[in-house]
Image (cartoon, rainbow, N blue to C red; front, top):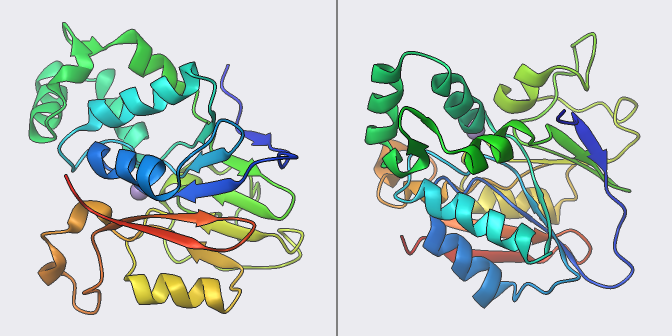
Length: 238
Ligand SMILES: [Mn+2]
């Protein structure tokens, strides 16, 4: 049974990184963790979800995460709305599921008409959020008006423009993705010590900047060191 959340203790040695929405950009993901971060076995790596869809290699991203877990890297993946979508379509009409998979270059995720077991098992067990000593990590955010703040799975994977209330969150900061933001805005929230930090710089939108009015600085996959607040920026290479 999947847990809704986990409490994660800071490692005695080792760093803590959070990476935003990867969306099938496996080469970019690998370059960020190996060339920029230089990930070590005693570092914690938190992944904010939306591993799949839109980009060229969803299977590659899932395989990279599964390989890290197998090699005993301290990986903490979260569930995004695109992981929900994949699981939901997997249980629906195959013609529609096939259309979705083909559109997203994901036919290599299935065997017959269903998701391969290793991917389904990984996706269905993804937690919705993590609690750290000084942070909440979640794909989209929390609905501060919800009766059950930490039980609202739809909000955690879908909400946009969440509000912040220090009492509800023990004054911990909330780190999330889901909504692509221009790099200057992300840097500003970090520099100004904002309680809400979005780490989605729209890595998958490298060729689509023109769609966005005020967000010319998109197309990077970024990682935040939770202890030094250093930002690692990897331009899309997929
Ligand atoms: Mn999302």
